[in-house]
Image (cartoon, rainbow, N blue to C red):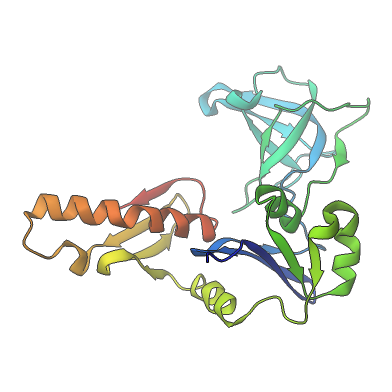
Length: 246
């Protein structure tokens, strides 16, 4: 029998670790800090402060006063960033602020926007709610009665209170994500090297490319075998922006 998909929420002071597991092991993972949300999904009434054709987008103030990192965001032209300076528009954060840069925005939403200066209109869902929506058939185990009561109106009977949400297998799978390397099928391995400009992933085929096949055919077969696990690791490690795989 295949393992049922399950969302597990392990609660500690100030932090909730959320893991989605199924037949193939760990599927999704997120760290949620309710007291310091990342802002993804938040909806703002923003004001376009500058349109920069060279960057194919515009800067949008999300709070009154002088825009700062976190108080302003970048709206690509492809997401509605072609409005002239001074325009008020509703925007949603699609990527959190990081590395001293403001959040990435999208204006592709239909919401009622009351008049007024730039301001927060609506908080986005937390990591647990986002993963619950992404995996609608999965049950949810939480080891904290207070958080369960808080989420009950949104997630209803999917929630179950347990003594320990993360078993040994989940703890081991999550701990492995903290390291820069991961083993891929057939003896291949990957190592992750973040830089300010991009994330570089080195794929070492190792024994996966050995054998009696011609070198080109062996490398192609090893690459094909490694791709699903490589994609899973990118998702689990929440890697984004520019990614280069060698």
